[in-house]
Image (cartoon, rainbow, N blue to C red):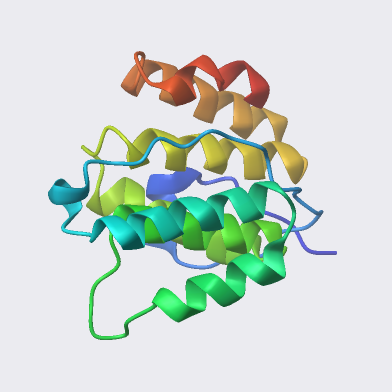
Length: 161
């Protein structure tokens, strides 16, 4: 039986990989588009990333993955929105370890990003809740409320309890 380590997103960044169990369905969510100039992402690419999130929310994962793969450039570092979309794809495809690692990348390298840091925390909690770790999901919910009280994701924190 595979189990999930309950170490939290910051501990995950330090600890590396682990295995998970259970299936996490894609949660329907409204994701605001970040300030395009702040992330230096062309507006057209941001629009496509929003479309990919919509496809994931509609459980059209194969289409989303194909479209996302067409955007990937190996010579450029991933922006927070790209990491977030990649994590959402990982969740939708049952790759929970990879999803949590990507969410940890956002938490560690973009922890002051008011758009993507709280979104990453929310989906971290969702993964823990859906994989049978409600106590950890509750703790993530509290961290979300504490760190990002004004975020739209904090208003959804009760979904993690």
